[in-house]
Structures are given as structure tokens and as C-alpha cells.
Image (cartoon, rainbow, N blue to C red; front, top):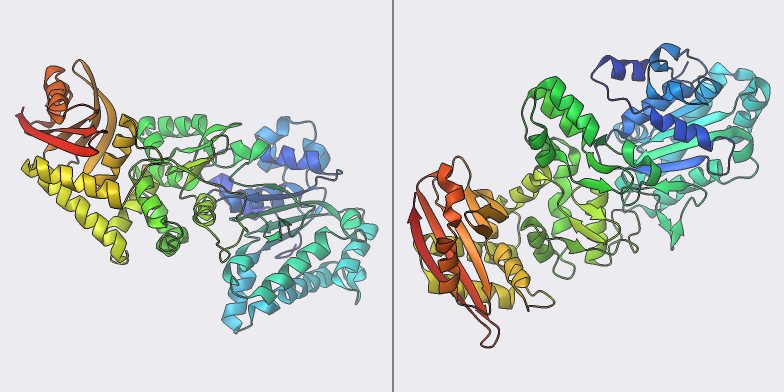
Length: 529
């Protein structure tokens, strides 16, 4: 048993000794690929979506140096046809690329040398465990010899496969040498069919493109954009979260609000597993995303102001969906040609969820919204953002103060200079502008659209958060109608009725737009409960 070669099953043993949600059905999909031309699989997911757990599970299942019956006999995989046929039947080569990067940094070695470090480490263990197979041969020849002598092929499990691509983002030579090593293993007619039973690579990014094609083209890729049959293993399913909430006495509705949002056609709702487990164990719903390294770099990408990138982010924060073309993304951290490339990276990092059918992206849940909201309070936003946020803050002040003419002028300015829907020709377009204009309210208010109340539905309601001393606001929008009529509708249909529990003051805001004069108007009245 070695560190990389046949590392045993102790890692997975620790996992199932903790709170474990059974994801062993993933193994059956890998088993089905063995012996086929589709036995090379690359799974890409955001951080903290259980990639390393899956890698340790596969090690425990395939490793021929272990007896893992007791770990899997009561799991989902045990009910499948190929369970015993593949259990502990292969040599396993398990690599976490981040460990080699850490070793290189500690020793002051260039990232260009990491591929050689990987091969040297594997050869050293092979020579120790199977000296007759190595015997001075090169790595590939030694593995083929090992297969011939033992009758067992190798299952490659590579965790954080893209770590070097990410860390050496400005070192083309290091990237090229690393990709050449992977091609040597997985695109060689003299090695791959003879030695490789299956390969499972996992990371944040899909395989880097070489031109328009994958740099290691024989892999079948399942990214966060289209996980296909692996969707239910991307995170926790809704049923799994419901069971955890019942077990720990937590509100499923709150869990859904905080951690749901990654939707796939073959799995419906998928939840962030790390955050769900943190929430049920700590008995508190909050953002656990900020405790990951992914959160550190968000501002870097947002500040890449391709084609009004910052305005797009503000539109996302205000609750809009944004069309994204994901095809041009090079699957790396340095090649950005458009805002679509930056937004696609944010999808891969887990900051946005993407509807593949509609090709639209949005912020998925309250946890990620909290990370974006922090940007609004940060000091590193650029001048353009500061101007817009200042305008929005003044708009909020004028609204609460009842200064309707100032509100109308501010909305006019934002409409003309900051935000322009493709077609500003209906009430929905007006709604987008209003949500964008009141972006500064997001930190102190809960925004609710189409709130059922009284005898109708209020267009947008801003409900003050618990610690806020601000009044509640109901905003009614009218296209080609007067703002006075909008306020009249709020009163006639008794929209404030739904806010009885809030008590105190409610600001009723009617906003109208005249498409002939192209002017906004605003009427504000107060109501006390």
C-alpha cells in the first residue's frame, strides 16, 4: 500500500464514519465504462461540491490491496449487477495534483518541473511495491509490465486535475508539459488500451481547449454546464436535503432558499453539499461559501469590465437573468475575450447557475447572493460602480423622504446612462429598471416581486430586515399610465394588508412611464399600520 499506488480505503472509511449521504451510485456509472472506449471520464464541479469525497470513494472501491466489502455492502452500489465483479479488482493510481504543487512551492521548484515530480513519485512507489515490474523501465513501460505480471489493469483517479492549469495560468510551458503528460497516459495506443481500465479526473474547470477542441480529446467530459447522467452526483438532491433537515430538525424551506438553485434536467434541484452539511451541523443557515478559497477571487473577475461587465453583475444582483454564450470559453483562468467568457467562468466556479435550454445565467441562492452583496460594501469597486451606488443610495433616501420628483429624475438618469433593456416597451422593462435603480436597498431590505396582498398582487415590495429601522416600501409600476393611478391601486386593493406584521410605516410608491413623452413620474404617500 502506497501514497499514490493502491492507497487503500482508510480515506473513505473516515467519510462514512461521519454523516454520509450515499453517492455510491456514481461507481456504477464508472463500472459501465470499463472495457469500453468511453472509459476516460472528466468531471468538473465548483469547489466544495464533493469532488474529493468521490475520489476517495472510488479509491476504496477499486483498490486491489484492500477488502472493502464492509464499506459498500449496505450502500446503493451493492444492488447493481457489476458490484462484485469490479470490487477491489484493480490497481489504483490516486493523485491529488495540489499536493505536488504544494511540494514544488515548498522546495522552490518551478511549476514546469511538476510533471516530472509526478512521474518520479509514481515510479518510486512502483519500484518499491512491484520491483520486478519497474526494473529501470520508464513509467509507461513499467505499468504495462505490471499489468502483464499481475493480470490487473490500473484505474487512474486524479483529483484537482486542473490545479496546475489554474496556478500556472501565466506559464504556458508548464501547462504544455502537464497536458503532454496526460496525453501520454490517456492518448497512447501503446499504453492506454493495455494499462488503463478507467480514468476519473475531477476539477473545477473542464479540460483546457487546444484551439476549439479539448487538449485531451479522448476524455468524455461532464461539466457543471451539462452533467448529463452525473447530475444527481453533482451535489445533494432535494430528497437528500429533506432527509437531512428532518434528521436535524431544520427547516427545509430555509435550506432551499439558502442552498438550492443549481438545476439540471436529469436531477432537478441540486444543493451545495458542503454548505448543507455545515448548516445542519451548526444548526444555522448562513453563507458558508465565504470560507472557501473561491470567494477570494470574485472581485478580480468582476473588475474585468468587458462590455459593461459591472452593469451585468448589478443586474444579476438585482434579480435578473442574463443570456450567456458559453461556447467560446477556453477553460482556463487567463484567456478572456468577452464578458461571456468571464460569466462562464463564474458558472464553473459556482457563483452563477446556468439554464442550458434557455442559455440564461442567474445567481442561484441566498448564500451566493450574500457573497455578491458584500461587493456592494467593499472598497475595491471602481469609480463607475461608486457613482451608480451613490445614485441608488440617494434614490432610496429620496423615496423614504417622499421626494417623488427627485425619484423620477434619478430613475430617468439610471435608465438613460446606466441601464438600457433591448426593448423598453412594456411594464416588465420598467420593472427591470426599478430593480436596478434600487440596488442599494438590497443590504437592508428583502425584495419580493409580485407579492400577493389584499385584492391583488403588488409589483415589488421591499421588506425591511430585522435590524433595519427603515419603513417598508410597496412599489407599483404603470406603463403608459399615471403614477397617481399606481398609488391609488395600492390603496384600493389594500396591498399594505400583507405587511401588518411589520407594523409602523409603509411607503407607497407609484411609478409611471409615458412612452410618448419618454418621461417617468413618481407619486409617494405614507401609510401607518
